[in-house]
Length: 369
Image (cartoon, rainbow, N blue to C red; front, side, top):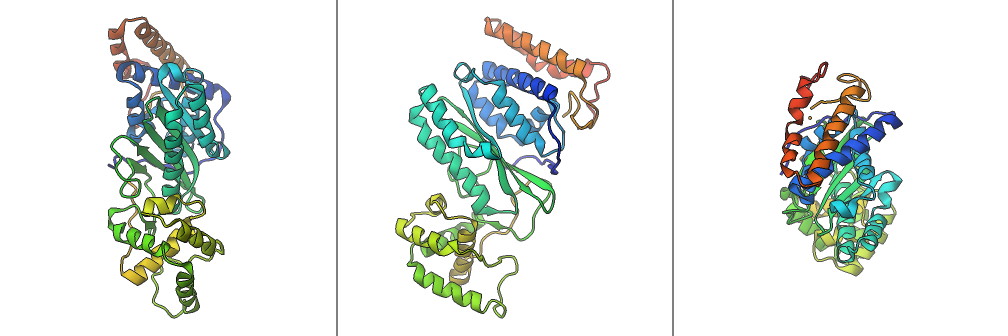
């Protein structure tokens, strides 16, 4: 399912400390309120909904149309529920840049601390695989720099990750939801958000690419010597062959090494091929091209890509953050959560009336959606 569109130009700057403190406090309260009424799995569903996620980032007061909304919102939520994960039944691992590389370790730490050992290996595998899909199987020009996985004590999960394209100055956010996911390599995304659509990309997770995926796996199981001989011929006559302009020839020296590794492991399907360490974008692109030339199975080149204000935004759009209104929202939501926790469950209806509350606040502009 793909729902919604969002505009994510790359923006510089840093979230002010005073705003981030409010963001993590309000974010933690919202997550807690959702869990109290609907359960932790509902948080996963909402993280996979680009409309809801974008609205959440906006209500927390971050830039409404900035790539930083993704990274800062996830960081605020992670800090907002810190040390309350077991109580809430929700855990968050990963983040931006180097922090994203710590995701498997953070999952392991959570498993050891909260007795979730039975889910650690599967969650780590999922984390690595969804990142590999969006960086290797879907070569859309956006390089991943943010990866955040949300998971419950039962092993259910949702992933929000983001890539950047420094040339176009756009970012792209990828939403994944474990619930109902049947295939990691065929139309797996719950949503992909970006108004900027690339041309002539390599989309091996499209359903139209099924035969190309299968052919690529067959080729990866053959002795690389034969493959490399054919590859050298293609490179040799590259200038005269009628090759598609949208499928450039990989140049990396590591292709041979990764092909030998794939040959040794004999992957059963495309997902296993992707999971092999060292098999990256160049190797997959090479296999896909040869599969197209050998078996006549072209891959899809179709780009798969398909917002609510309450407190203003850091950059002053559509207006500066209103601290008074922000504090009032915090107070109201804190009271709602506190009352719900002591048994006055019907008071949670007040949470549903927050939209009315924000409309009644003087000076609050909600017409910029």
